[in-house]
Length: 333
Image (cartoon, rainbow, N blue to C red):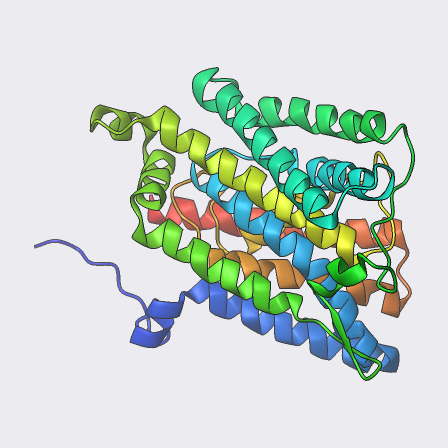
């Protein structure tokens, strides 16, 4: 007779099993955070706060979607924060300083991300350099490239009132003086698409298998190098898309910016249930985790916490998330 681990009425509920306990907990935490900030500061309850939360969510969600694939392989991509700003700088420089069409700037922003993803993939999958070290190096390269490419100048993408200002309406439109955050629709579409890629395609299945047991996956005949590279290319693609979201949402991009953004995106993925040891994770969980990070970033200033204090709180949240991930892996072992 085999022993079977018993749950409880809550965890054994079919709906709870389908959604996942961690996702339900994250949703409850998200609701509690919103209620707390709303009670602590009447100013938080304004419509402008929703816009601010969404502004953060756009680029963090895109970065989070991409890096989730790397984390599932058991790796990581530390270049996404600096890379996002670097690619946005290059795209904006081509538009504003070189007079190229917005479409060219958008294309170059994404292509730069894909190129860096290929480089990261080669270093990690083919060169077998530890992902932390490889992407730490490319993070520093990306930070320097942004400064060199723009001659150490800040870059502002076309304003909404200019001829090429339509690019600002990708994530936010103005209707009768009211700004509508339509970017959430694009993020939702991309999240659904990449969730299908992760769970329903060969690429996704092999990426999960690599994270679960890389050597066993190789011995089963899977081209591990190919699919491990695919994870980093996907991360690079979404970093480029994140660069577009960042550049078109905020006023200006400054060379050398982006430090720490990668940790918020990675933290969002971990909070959402993606395991740091690889083999498991979900795009839906990452989106929920990113919302936690966005609400914290937006809400903490409303209760009087300055930037340094905000980092302490966010750091503590990430420690809890990592501890929960370790505890969950030990329980499943």
